[in-house]
Image 1 (cartoon, rainbow, N blue to C red):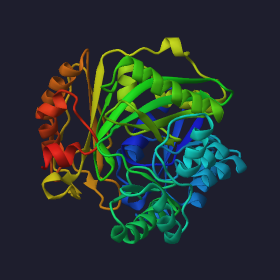
Image 2 (cartoon, rainbow, N blue to C red):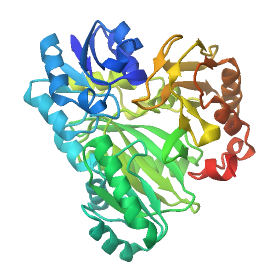
Image 3 (cartoon, rainbow, N blue to C red):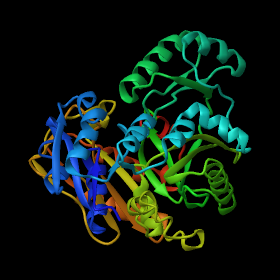
Amino acid sequence: MFKKILIANRGEIALRVLRAAKELGIETVVVYSQADEDSLPVLLADESICIGSALASDSYLNVRNILAAAIVTGAEAIHPGYGFLAENAEFAKKCEEHNLVFIGPTPETISVIGDKASARALSQEVGIPLTPGSGALESFAEARKFVKKISYPVMLKASAGGGGRGMRVVYNADELEKNFQSAQQEALNAFGNPEMYMEKFIEEPKHIEIQIFGDGKGNVIHFFDRDCSIQRRYQKVLEEAPSIVNKTLRNKIAKAAVKLAKHINYRGAGTCEFLLDRDGNFYFSEMNTRIQVEHTVTEMISQFDLVQEQFRVAYGLGLSLSQKDIVVNGHAIELRINAEDSDYNFRPSAGKISDLHWPGGPGIRVDSHIYSGYTISPHYDSLLGKIIAWAPSREEAIIRMQRALDETIIEGVKTTIPFHKKVLANAFYKRGAVYTNFISRRIFE
């Protein structure tokens, strides 16, 4: 196994990777920006190196500084977490060129499947259903020409995107140019790639995803499904596993995901995302070539550590388990606790945490990098942490999560806890009638 790895990320995912590494006896190096000097991952790592100012472009997106930190500390591999450089093929290639193992897919795989437009083409090759859509759109003129083929409404998406960034729904021609330009600029700022693509917008779908794992040698397994339908601004806020679909449909979607991953000889952790319409038809949306924020619910129902599995595969040990080893046990729900004011359109809330108490008890897991006295920076994502509740059934998991929220205290900044309490108490949510428009239709009608 690796003796030392570098973690090229921040916040709760940096801490999550650090913990998985320590349990395998791997030494850790954490890079950080000036704004994150006092963060928990930095305090707990074996070594830490400042790589730039608070601006992500100067630090967490600074390839030169990250590679230099890995080389000078003697790290053998780099774990990119999610976001930032996690799905950057050029970064993965640079790691290889400097004899560093990139803990993720190959650069070639990231290029062909991490790019949303080419991923659609590959899905078509293996016969996976797709919503009507385009290839890469490099200009507004191309977008205006293509929309005539599929008609409004359409969804604009960043080819290199994720986390809801670079996404816009467009209902008519008047909105197209403004939304194309703003989405393109957002994609450039977030991912360094302004390329867009377009697909037909499905009204009121469920967002279902399959967690897959490959060894890069043709073996691919899946860890079943997650429901990520509850979103705001196309960013997930609550996830659960398994999804609320029947077993036959679940297996069909999982089979499609594995088929696609095998087609590209996938290595490491990945997620195939699908949209499910009211008639039970599913359509491939995109594939994320990294660990997901919501991997925790999959770990809770399967009792496998997905990050440690990433280490094993990256080191060349292959998969530690087979498909028959993976069974669904119970139900898990994850809430993303963000520093945001949901009463004011989820406005970010920066400041110092003056008091903090996370929940505990049976079936509760908390992944968070914050502590009392920690200052929330306005420069990055507003995620403070994740509360995950597991129980034998979905009904029991909801009750357990409600209890956990009642125990949670976070003072000094606004959080999304009051919003989550509304969701969990909602009758439509309780019976599983959730779609991607749930928040606008059921919570803020």
